Length: 459
Image (cartoon, rainbow, N blue to C red):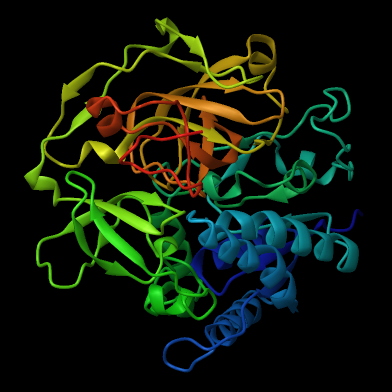
């Protein structure tokens, strides 16, 4: 008789990972639960939330009658996730630590601990996602070290595993898994991939997992908690005082403690002003934050394009980059919701992490490819065209201008229900407002390089 397959399941102390472990147990696998402690400071009430979550995870293992292990990745999390988080903010970008954590901690540190130390045949998490493999195919996978170099050799990794969206499209978490390495993905099970959140809660309620069912779902950045974000960041980064400036008339409206504290699209709390103003541009050299009036006071003009397959008036930009840019797009009235300075339709990423095929064959062949992207979880997918550069970076041209494209966030690419991978947004094209004002004297703005909205973006 064959021994039961050994699956090591990551437990967070929440309902999703608890039900994932339960379902694995029902399939007849030998299941081990592992809780990862990644952050060890106290919350705003002086309580270590990690300890509380660990206790909940331990209770899950008791109820399911499976072994429990706890591992600490506090040092690794600080070096690979939190330090990156601070560095990105210092550069004026807005990072996504959840994506970085999955890449470096859950699907690297935890994965290797499960396989090398606990002898796992596969690992599992409570993410709402699917892969192109059935369970038995996962158990047949062997460790394949990723070749060094800019791109993987297409013949090195045969039958690469695809990351597919979950059945519950609203809960789908492939966005957060878009940087996961192929060698870990091919040995991972996602038991919740075909279920809805409501059904998962029902399973928990019917199987004595009430203590995790009653917990509030974690939202926001785990290590910030309910603290004031500005106060938290200023514990680690030096203040860099600057001015709030109206983008429409360059009038100084107030001061702030650091341009890195603000994200495009967020409301800026300006002392002495009762009406809302919103961040639309940042000048890293002078430390100024440009803001626009409250949305209902402006009727923005939003970039609109025809289908990108029929781009007209294309021209090359930059030196050595195969980037296509149409003539300034036609501007058309849009609903009175946002300032046009928040809308852009062009961005450039760093080198893209492709999950299954690097890069996709169609993109290599044609140097361009139609797909969809999002840069925030649960935002609607935006049709776009990717243009591949020789260094593995891509230009992303959206079919319509997108609100608050944000450097530091990840542009995550999708096609036909598959998550293709992602790249960090490093550069933005000119806003609809800049184009409207006729101030676009070059083509691409590098966030944090001292671009001044008053003079138009510069390369």
